[in-house]
Length: 337
Image (cartoon, rainbow, N blue to C red):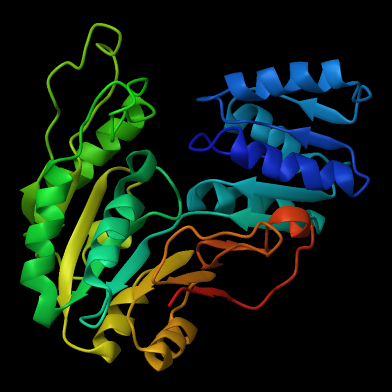
């Protein structure tokens, strides 16, 4: 089991618990960027009396430790959450060995806002779904498509609220946007902001580095939340995963165009749909190429249900005690009226 840095304890235990509960021993590698929570978990497991050898936590980089786990002949089943590029490498190594795979990889999630949506709820939730955890959640909506008749109003209100978000010390209770996880990720975010300008995008807010937060955070990597307009769905910024507080916003004419925009990426992890029309909700949700679709909500979860993506967002399904049942499940659609 190989887990990512963005939710280092949540996604780590999500893999470990089902493996042990279903009678397996487990070899688990946390991200080398965020190793501390996995180490503390190991201490708790020892204190709780978990027998030696049941949970084996190994630390190190992907090319060294991760590659050794994936290629080891005595490990028949692999569960990975992380980037699509790494998932491709795991597939290359594991496929000739006929290992079972669950790969939950990148996302470039669409957020479709129709004119008949509950405007205030769509607006406030879209702020959260765009910038929660600095946008460093695979389920964040980084592509916002708004029906043309309400586009100008929505953009103005959205940008005004984004500008009011506080970038600050993560330990302060009133902080909305904390630090980017690493210098590498921070530089990646800035690269895509500059690329957006080259592609003809307009930076409506953000795109800049804030002044030093305080002495404790002097070496942290901070970025003002960024909203970009005017980028066509096919441009690189709308095609490639950024994984930071950077979103694009663009109008659509009708339902068919909204669907074409939503499906116009190689990813298919999640999507969010805002409408008061129940027939449209079912019709559009069923046509979106995505493993999970939220209607009039975001991040509504039941961990007993399977979870995973389609296309380059993954194969196999994860979720609760279905985490090690690697077969195709129906799409999950959560609707709130």
